[in-house]
Length: 291
Image (tube, rainbow, N blue to C red; front, side, top):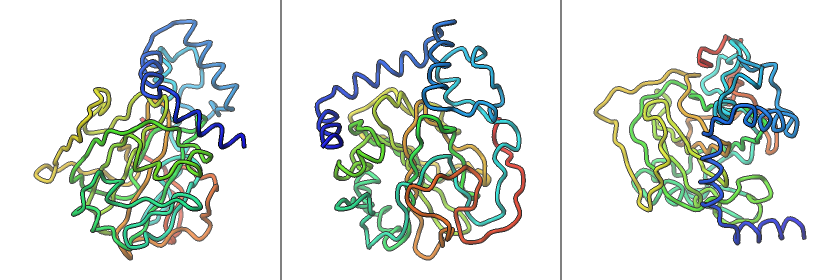
């Protein structure tokens, strides 16, 4: 009953207005007020500051600089494997794409075409492929890294609503990840093409990529596309590819037969950036992307 009420409230809330206000506050340099808020947040969500490159809350001039804080060198050792986990978070769902249908939660699916903003040609490349969806909670590290080496093909900003993306909402809002505002990044690699979708949510002030900077705001009512096929924007496994300015969810799509997930993975399992996402396992090496 409470879960149902929480979802109904989300339909009624002025989500975009709340998000705009949250974004402005997150950029605000409030001196001691900012430090008080950061310290409250650390205590409220049990943020592990011992692994942060700068553990002292008073050194962060804005809430966003705290939220996107870098980690200490070697805080996330990187597995020797074909695909590493690109973020800290909790596994929402993962598995096989049934033709073009992605499993969200019991009773809920969404299509690859809907997720990619109606790009049917791009979506068809992932028919019967694999997907993984990872939820980043408020306490998590909020930079996003490359699961493998890749060359950027295109980026698409897709406007949408701004529901929360927590597990309760995922179970109660149909097509959640294909309804929310999102940024789609498609890459090619030696394993084939793959997609990383940065999904926005309530109070997610903005999303940014390593090659573009902040993508939103400005928020547009229209889909915006950037093509990079004629440029050589290549990133190595473990490189930072983006970040959430206030957190959300990453959805990944892989082509058929390109990945076999780590056998230890299961829904709700907590994961760390750099651990093995694919079946291949080996020694770990220091990550090179926490600057």
